[in-house]
Picture 1: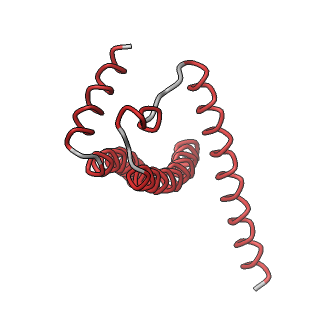
Picture 2: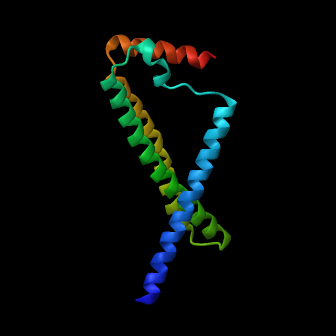
Picture 3: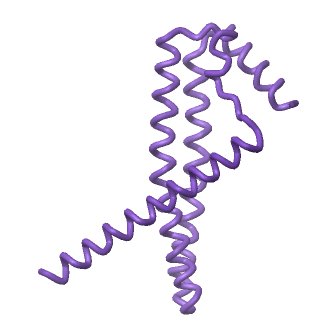
Length: 144
């Protein structure tokens, strides 16, 4: 019982440390990206798009949900990558390495899909005129 508790506590501590490192790394990456170029969001064009408070709240909810989902998946990726590296160092079972690589790629794909889905859901909150204007803004921003 005592050993099981220590193992569980160790696992929880390891996950906490990994999530903490992920948070620090994400914050550093975000800070570096902001210094390189200020990425504008739909909220920067709220007035031009004439977003209602209800639309703004729906968009914030979509983005918050996306962020939570992506953070969990990225944390799992960190763990998987560590496990893969460990298996490679000790020349572990190839089938196990392949399984973990497949899971890693699946998670990466699901992150990309979640981003696309969130984008589509945001577009659904806009009126046809707002969507047209938003697409024009995005095209102009990409040219910069």
